[in-house]
Image 1 (cartoon, rainbow, N blue to C red):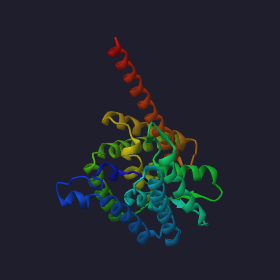
Image 2 (image 1 turned 135 degrees about the vertical axis):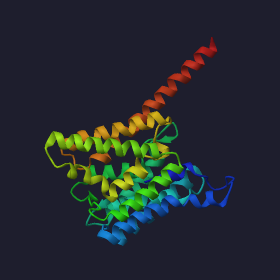
Image 3 (image 1 turned 90 degrees about the horizontal axis):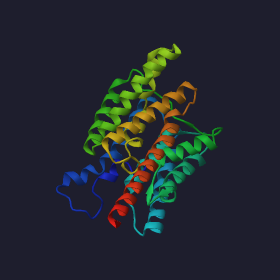
Image 4 (image 1 turned 180 degrees about the vertical axis):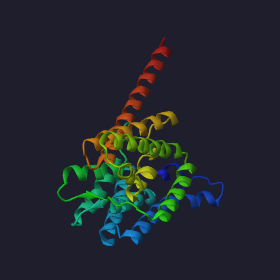
Length: 283
């Protein structure tokens, strides 16, 4: 996943008030590893440890190489680790190459697809969406739910809420979850399907990564708290429409379309305001 919640935490070389802050920088990678372990021990959700390791190694290697080459510094590997492990969890393929390619595309998008010095797609969401679109015959995504195993689900949600609350992103997760549940009942009413089947996807490991890492990515969300809630609500709206049209990978495609569009609109508004300010100052 990218420049996730870590991006808002102290970077190497910045003053720290206490060792607790230093330790917290490593909680997101630990948390996502817990999701992997819980899912693997409960359901054996990984294709293989080797494929997941390949995704992680590729992600970190690309981050180090591109960061050093293009920015002249060695990036902290935690963000790349999150991207790699997310790819390793979410991608399904009988071959090894999609794991490496998806990680490479995800990390490269951070450095290449930039507007005014800022990348506008969540890296792992971009990489996974591209792979699903271009290599649909070879690549699928994780579709496991926790089922009746409530304990790992409750533990993961508790840890996830603490982490996103700590980086002031809990309102984004909460808005998406409430919106998803509301639209799940609406879909059930519209289609006649059992409400349990519409709600079930959000109990799976895939959605834990989506709600705690993808939609909350500080580098690819708009600035204002209200704007963040509106955007993630629109992501849920787009997902519902896609689900009604039987689009299997609706959440990934919804974020792929809505998130960057919101950032570009924000950048356009900022540019207009700056131009107006300069014009008023000139007069």
